[in-house]
Image (cartoon, rainbow, N blue to C red; front, side, top):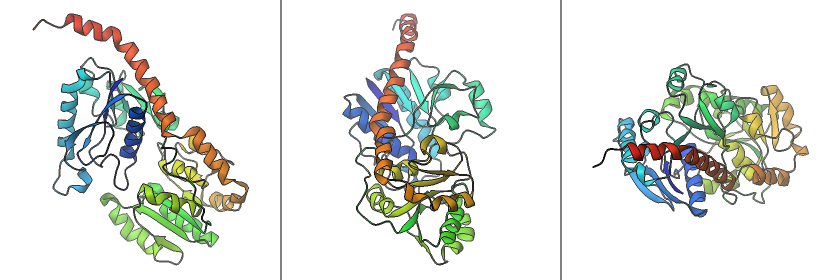
Length: 356
């Protein structure tokens, strides 16, 4: 198939450091190319890919301090995709609802994977207006607030089987990985680790929007004994970081759409203790790859049960459920289904087109 992958310009594909959506787009694109498909990636110019790259801007917007209106760049990229649309069998967007209006008015089949939270009131009129646009959820939990949307499938994320692997190091600390924000629960992770008397290592970024929260609430907590703030880490550093942890703490307080950090830990054989929010029950096999808890007390109690979990079983479960190859095959099933159902429409558009 001739497939267009359209990524946000926020981060490079793959991102240099943090960037969940762009990381998933990279893994999916590489697997599709490996499976023999002709893929074009619309992304920032500093992206690295085996596909053909169409640069929407020379570098990732987050790293370009001169950019003040990223929406303008995304709008320009969408128009470029529209003009090239006849060259593809399927267009796959990762830009939330931005493509809905423009691409509902052209013939090439398209699908959008929704990567974020969907429980905000303002989402309701958007998905009511575009109720027939095909969309993919990254968890069943993510789609619950929008029953009116045209859900065609849930596709859980996956990462390359050999990207992260268990390392022969002795676990000696608790880990927190990802992003420091109120909904991610870093304050609760600190309290859990301190109650258990175990060091907490924090490998996470701080977005500008969360800088005040970090400076006023979290940094003072980190100055206490037993917390080591590492900052952002890349994929090459994650295997060592996660393998060295007794557990990855995910004490979230929001409807997590997926949570890549959980499967990253599983790939390293590291158990996860996560709060029962959003996608967590779909990702974690309670009692096998970790423990699902309701609150801080539940997390503290689960720490005592970590010895019952076998790291080799956690890694095996990752291989069964969360590889990039499985993700790509799931998406190919979606692409083929949409292409087959779109064939009559494509024929009508062609036949009705005026002669030039």
